[in-house]
Length: 130
View (spheres, rainbow, N blue to C red):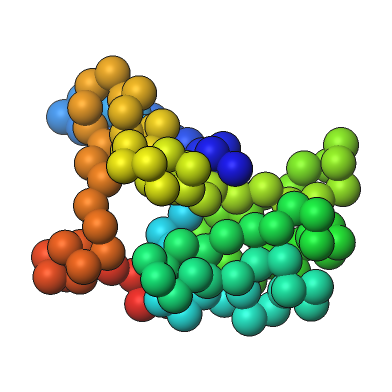
């Protein structure tokens, strides 16, 4: 619990006015309303918590089949080859449960990340439906 996993994506270098440009993106789990990873998990290790929409992984129940990795449109669940399991972002649920922000947001030196509750994100049109 509390491990915030996501993907760092790099695009480029792209030519922009004769200068190279790199774009870096942080892509955490979107905790979808209808998560494909949950529906394909044969062991039931992935579940969506109805109270807050978090998509959670029970690593003890995970059999390491990687079906969730293949099913996720953003390839957010990541194989942990050494353990034969999958790992994914849980939005630092242990921090959320005591009123703190996820570690990625709290530790972002440039303040580029913002944590927004699902209700507010939905009103802003930012909640993935997948």
